[in-house]
Image (tube, rainbow, N blue to C red; front, side, top):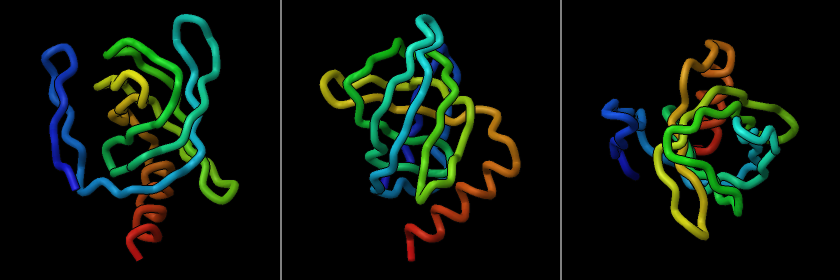
Length: 113
């Protein structure tokens, strides 16, 4: 899987570890309109994810992101690092709370098994 780095306003965000293909329910809020945008993850890693969605946002937009797995939520701030028209958005996670990091790590271990 990719260990790519994406640029955002001159800052680089490493995608920590491998990306894992997994389809999970995702939702984020457009910071300008307040509109909720739904989608599904295409892949996820410790540092970010790609969400398949019809919604678009500008690169650099910061959102509150919620991903659900088996009724449990992972929540974090995230920044849009890439937009692929007709496919979706790539996000890098920002300032994720320790409890949420632990939840994500557990999910990733389950996905790998």
